[in-house]
Image (cartoon, rainbow, N blue to C red; front, side):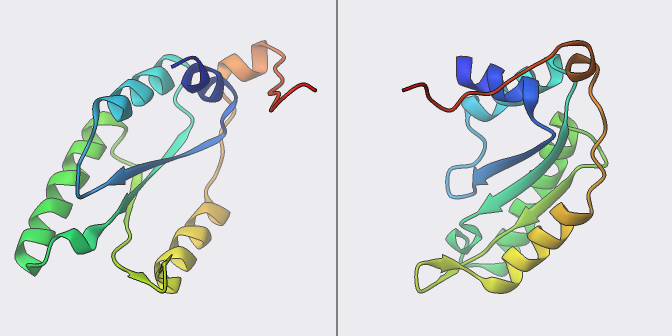
Length: 126
């Protein structure tokens, strides 16, 4: 939990990854709550394991439900990406290209906390 708080303070862009075979977990909601407290940086949702749903109708229903819930928890403008299937142990190339393209054009806004407080993130001290 403390690392979630530290990352929420300094993040410019957050990718929230949700495993669709499990759905939203409590830790996801806790992290979104921490983000909200610290000024809510730009947030993008990434849903993986969409191949868990074999039926196309069931998959579309789950995607719609997930989009509604994500928009409710974050903001209406937030984008949610669905990554389905793997090839040779990697996610599909086209899905990753679309996500990377969106990340490259997203506009980052300054957060009040970051402007008012100097900050530094340390990976490790040896």
